[in-house]
Length: 378
Ligand code: A3P
Ligand code: MG
Ligand code: MG
Image (cartoon, rainbow, N blue to C red; front, side):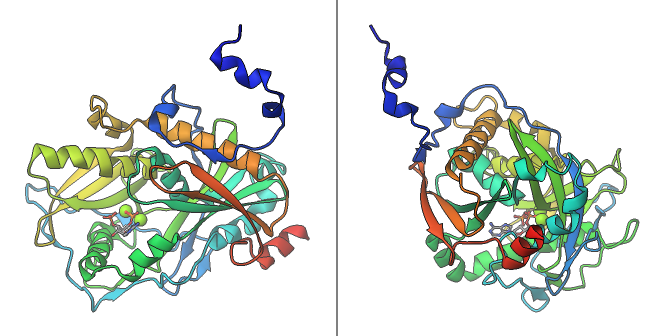
């Protein structure tokens, strides 16, 4: 007699080492112990200036400078300066992994972990990993990730879905202003120099970014990823990155238990995923009223965010997020077998469906630039 679970073993065609053709995303499939996740360490950093030019240093890093806690509430007008003092980044420019590849190219000869480490690693943006972590709970926005293997390394680069492109091009004015307000909050909370003061009279230029480059490992997947960091707290108990970094967020003031529940279920999941990956310990939230003023601040500890949903049947579970991400990385590793920077596997996901994959060569999906491939081949 054969048990149902043994059928795979009995069917020889299942033993062919063919990669799976799809990956399910149902949370129930990923319940289990929290997988191994190496404490993220910072390998380096880079900055993008007001013209979006790359610099291999920390010039764009800002310093956490909260308002004095003398009993007064803050009163930050997040709409101030909109739209006259707003220089939004050109979102038509698809930067893909370019800035991160620039950093990798500059540091490839002196990466910790030895010369072979990069060949076994996955290189991507933190934001792409954040989307993977939240996938089992996401009900609205799908994603596409392009993957290529080159000199052993697996590179993952997001592709804007047609739906996301339509949303971006038809973004209503209120949403554009809300985006501005998130960046404006950073300006009220950060100084350009340690011990300096904030200057909300200046422009908000979203070309400027400071990015940390981190090393970690999820299960047996070594990771090299980069993420934008809002600021460093010069007063943090430890000055060692990423532990001294602070993530800033804005959110609507909450007035009812229902609003809080929904905040814990949706927003805190995203905040947790974004900051847990790089090991950023604190998220400082500014709560804005309907007039767009931040009148209260609250610090959320990344490692305590799960407590808000631990006893909620419709909450999220960090193990599910991380187990799904590990499963996706294995799926990608097993799919992208050929080492060829012009060969691309496009992983596509829409809520309610499994992740599927298609194969492409060259434009428009190939994303490893010639300058990178040639310099790495020298
Ligand atoms: P909030 O964080 O207050 O939402 P980040 O928080 O990652 O540092 O991003 C800073 C701001 O960029 C956000 O402020 C928000 O205004 C804008 N932003 C980031 N990701 C966005 C997205 N996917 N869609 C729209 N706006 C986004
Ligand atoms: Mg940011
Ligand atoms: Mg932020």
